[in-house]
Length: 224
Length: 306
Image (cartoon, rainbow over all chains, first blue to last red; front, side, top):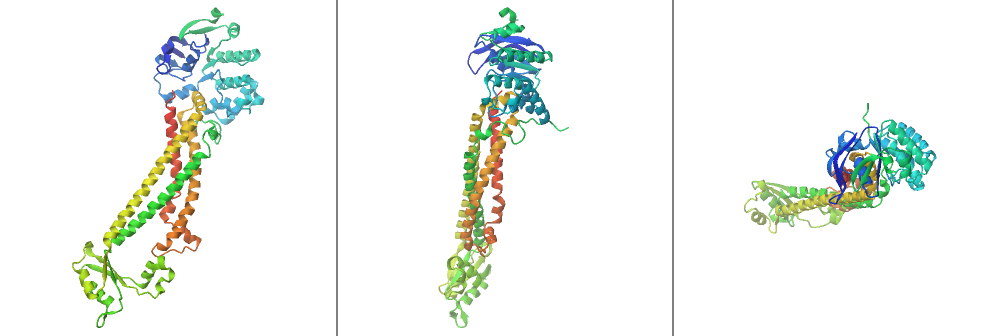
């Protein structure tokens, strides 16, 4: 599913922000991604979403060897990966509905199916009545829910989330964790980066712990 | 089963927010100005080509012989014009044509108007003389002057040749101007597209991260750019055509045979058919330049993304 062998990452000629990463994520697995600010969590997520290629080592994502793959082979791979960004990264000129519909339309789904699926997803995240609102008209929590809906609507094989509960209240955060658990049961591999110790305590599981760009694998409950 | 074609929103939607990134004002205005210039350059090239053909054809005549006071006797029983015509007829290797009244009138019409043929002017007899292989028979001017003193022999070939070279130079300059306009248009589209890419960098990176292909993103940009360029080109053409028709109307009296400019059809016919055929191609060519340049610019920019 996902395998890193000796992976390192540096931006340009700067210092390595990730070094000698070796781990595998089996299909349908769940991992917390923990670490202090600046430890390299976001860089690792960028690697796994194919926003950057590794500077050293070998990275295999969903069967594709990323460091040697041709550019034209990456878009279909990206469509199998869902990502919830810390800053949401919604398209400001599109409505909530159209933002959520993006992955389905990029996958070439028929418009009728897109409308039905997006409506259902917006209903699930409690934004059905806000489907025509643009991001600027939504609160931080609502924007986060749109971002989550966009990340999961395509039933991705790999779902990555960077502080997905940062703008959600406890009730919404729990609903999100239920959704992630459901997707996980259906076979989606999930990595969630968070600083929320309470969330990790309530949902214990395996964790990847980054310190200064190096990785330690351990049980999350060992950390809290 | 039809192949799946990834898209963003349904056709016609502004998926990447390009309406704000690629303004519908500056680019069309620049293209309008360039197409205006291109239409003038194209008209200049075609007009220069026509002149070159006309003057090159005229060069074959080589000699123009003018006989002043043609109706006075050169010798008992023979007028001066007839004496010169007899010499020309008796010369081996030349073909002669004496201009008639209608041809005189056509030549003088630009300066003297439609009544040129009825004016009481003491006009010379004029002969166009074509020499075989362009070689003037030895001693011909002397024999003509002897037959009718005061006869003037003009060697047109040299001047027509020079004018033909000038016309060809004008034609080349006009073609060069067209090329420069095309290059500037390409540069303008590339700069506008780059500005649009910079303005929409975040949106592009988001859809790229969601799995949009280079082809899809480039198609969105190229579609918007092509629409703006085509609109600007149509405006430029709409400005240029009346001006060209006006210029053609002014030069119509100089055309051999003249044109009936008084009617609308006459005004339209004042432009060469070739120009009418090529003018509509300008917006199409501009749109093609816009499409190709935008595609190349966007794809080159996207190549910087992983």
